View 1: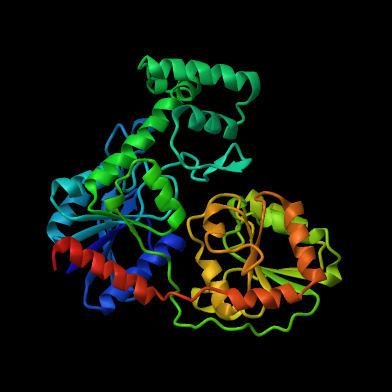
View 2: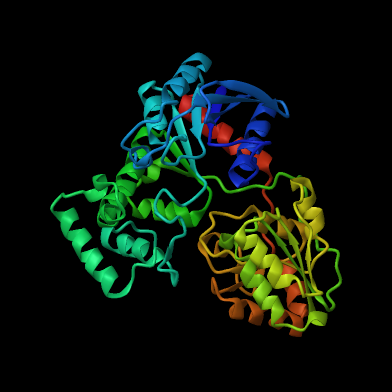
Length: 440
């Protein structure tokens, strides 16, 4: 059996959740005798190159498209599509598995369509929620979790809100845009900001149509969580196309009871991207409200020089209980987590299924997290961790103070961690899925 994995970037040049997930899936399948290959665009270059990463073949196909408005809107195919098709024809995979799709010059719906035309069985994995949400956050107007149902009017107004178009201006624009939509007048071709704003109902409509087209092209769609599976079903993706395969740990470790005695200061750890989406600023603000002798915060993540990271560092400069440690290798995450009382994950958007939550449980520590879909599916409030309202640093501070006042709650939470799933099990379920599709 030969499987090609398609995404936009790969290790070692780009390190993020989708890349690490794809690598571990390919590696574990290779160990089981499946021939695996990663195919990514070689952005800004006509040349196709090949390299090997820890025993895994990676092909970067030539993709030198000049990305313009039409291409981003999905009205023009990227130039590298021909080279993509050539490589697929040459490699002759039994399965082609898409892990990442996006508009523009990267791998997108046109690539899936070509694979479909070549009659190659297709598997899709939805790692993010952009397939049903333009913003990818599933947070309606920054105030509440969205139910995920694609609705032209509501989704358009939510996008306007995110762009600062509110009040009377927002209502007038929304009414005008919906009137044009109902009469079939698409202003996106005007190539200016007004045309874009008035044409947003057509953008939302395209999200729904593309989702259903992807479902029609695919043999199966792998979903990582129960909550997103339900959202896809709400949006009329056929249930028989959906397969739930949850995340797994790459380390072969059993859940421990933790190594740190619960005594003040409360030792909190943050591991993740230094990004506003991850909400580190909320955690720093919450810690800032508590006396330094009662709490400490250790931060692990790549310290970029962008405005957000700089702002977070400035917030913590005068704090004697906040420490920055830079990046951490994946094999050191669980051993490092075990040295703390709790992990904090203050996400400001609906992450799909943060692996770091499972890693914290495996390390023997509970999690304090914002109440968004991906966190709430894994954390049972007050049982194996604690949830607070997203984007609410005061709510987070209250949770931290609660644990400082009664550290026994940390010990109690440790008794309720779910059992760990290994990535070998994840790969095994994929092997069964591929075999079933191929009739083996």
